Length: 285
Image 1 (cartoon, rainbow, N blue to C red):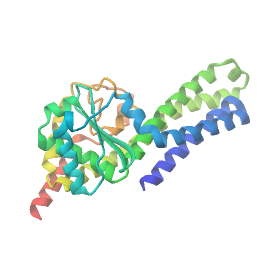
Image 2 (image 1 turned 90 degrees about the vertical axis):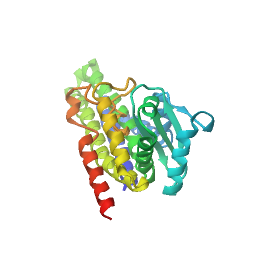
Image 3 (image 1 turned 60 degrees about the vertical axis):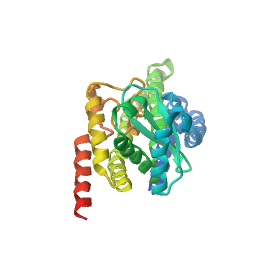
């Protein structure tokens, strides 16, 4: 299912590039755009995780400087029977975390410095289990590629705006209209794509973490702390293209814009309620 979603995302990117290329340069422009889209799909499949990690200045850690964190990751991976991913720490004073990579054998889990400071060991375990659940269910590739594609769509929208205002576009009113439509539709499409793939998978990853640890209350407690913190602080390096990758919205309640209508995360209160229900079921069992 996740592979199918990834193919759809890549196809959308290609179609949008070809559409913009045709509007800007006719048949020749469409061919060039097709080649560029193929190259970007190849690049995003193999290197999108490295792009995201580099953007957030994530630092890879080992047992020499993060033994406690690595012990948590290794224990959970052993229990879940999945390969141990690379572990990164992000130099960021707002607590958050995400997973990235194209499959469990090429995965990475990243947490911010502040998360390690404000959460206790049990809560950190819940957060890591959530991210490993993303890895286990192969949806890290979809989320990571979606981040790259959203950035590409934003770039295309800027090209479309420039093309619509250029002299060449004015000479061809049909092209100008197409480009103006593209400039409006493309960012909207990016938001819808992120919203569609993110909300459902967060609930699934929460459930996966609860079953992996057998202690859903630990993740619920972590989410409560992260949500309370996000009401007053937003991540400095966060952007809308990668927001859906994080365990909690990196903008929180700080960024109140029109884009808030297209939430990439379900309400934290709903996630906590779902975890509490799982806890109740586990106790009854």
